[in-house]
Amino acid sequence: MEDFRVCPATGLKVHKPAELLIKINAVTAIVFILIGGLMALLLALTKIPAIHLLPSDLFYRFLTLHGIAMLVAWIIFFEAAILYFTSAVLLNCRLAAVKVAWLAYGLMLGGALMAAVEILIGNADCMFTSYPPLQAHHLYYLGVILFAVGAILVCCVFFGTLAVAKHEKTYEGSLPLVTFGAAAAAIIAIVTLAHGAIIFVPTWLWALGVIQHIDAPAYRLIFWGFGHSSQQINVCAMVAVWYLIAAVTVGAKPVNQRVCRTAFVLYILFIDIASEHHILVDPGFSAAHKAWNTGYFMHLAVLASMIHALAVPSAIEIALRKKGHTQGYFEWLKKAPWGNPSFSAMVWSIAGFGFLGGITGVTFGTEQINIIAHNTWRITGHFHSTVVAGTTMSFMGLTYIVLPLIFRKEVAFPKLAKFQPHVFGVGIWTMAIFMMFSGSFGMPRRHWDITFSDAAFSIPFDQTAMMALHIFGVGAIIAVIGGGMFVLVSVATLLIGKDIK
Amino acid sequence: MAGKNGHEFEAPGSFVLIMTFFAVFVLVYLLNWKYLSDLWPIN
Image (cartoon, rainbow over all chains, first blue to last red; front, side, top):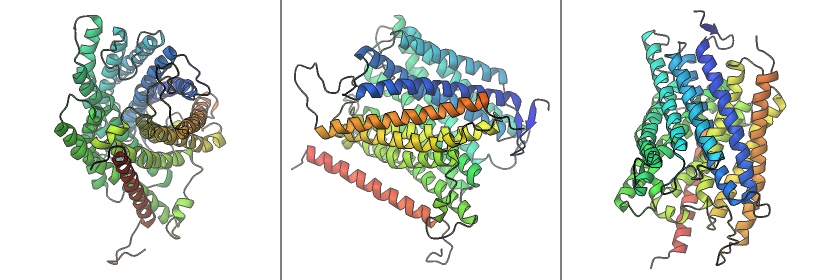
């Protein structure tokens, strides 16, 4: 019993070793968002033609590091914290296999640092996708593999903790919806990481010289089972976080939990198939294969998102109407707790993921439309809408709950925290919209010099697209300021925040 | 707010928001098909 404390605010029994692991994973995640955010600023300043800051080698190096730090390290370290929180804390039980959880953390940190160092010293200028025949140093692939093994162990500890909670009867009835959503994310994570192991182990052996050849189309197919599916873990975890924040900030309860749980099951069954849209322009796969996976099955996962898109706002509306905000259609929305950064971050996340990321994702994932969107900046704008405006924003919102609840600190600079989601939201929306806008004029993604200044023939872009590029830059700078505010508030809370007794 | 069948409609504001979302969805989808057909006209 000495391993537990009772939270005075929620009455939950908190397992102290689990609490420490939540803290260390969350803090590590914030360190990586700082690194990735710095890279984002340098890349954005290079993309703006009037500034064009970095030379080409550093641009691709920092683009690789930006991808690994943000898409992998920030997100998955934070998800590890979420898995421990939604299992041990919400189920009032001890964390299973604490030593394994620490081993997982060590592997993830060691792997991430190994990959990051290899990138920084110029041994892995292959970008996040590392498509063969581009080849990085074998230690880069080993770093990714170690990180993936650590992340698999995190999922094992999570499922072990669910078993402990069931065995020790620490909760009654079904799993809480948030834990159920996290479990769905963990199942998707295991499938995802298995794809990572299947493709990165032979690629590592290829870099070591043990294997002579990696089939490029096969690599792309299996890589995206890892590369895109890892973003589906994010979607699932993000939706679970929406339900959590809605419950904590306004006391929202979904009208029909069974429907919400069914939607999570739809994610498990069908969302990984969405990865197929990465190979829609790949000549190595049949039209039937592409149409079947992206035209039919993928929409069952879209249906799940639609269910959550209705369930979360309606739960919030019903909770606020019960508090007396019943005038007209939108009094509840006007009277919502906009001053609470956790709530406002959640609303930005729902709107960003739905209106920007979701709509464009389904549209660009259509086989015919993908032909005109593929490898343009429209795609980059789309996934910044889902991963940043959606997932990152929701994780920022959760941080404002975790700081007082787990770290037991009052949030420092509360006025700054109040505005932080709005600054970040305005910045990332502007940035993503104008990425997609310039992409619709054919602006390429992943390109150091989109004006093609040294090319043998000129490739002029419409001046509207060039104007959009500069507005993108303004949005990117605002987003970096908003991200910096988040890091500042989080770090200041940890260092100088008042203790909550 | 009462619905047609007499049951209370508990979240009318969310319903309006979701319908707006659907409208934007349809518009963006149609615009992309229009853009595609302009680039590659089919006769």
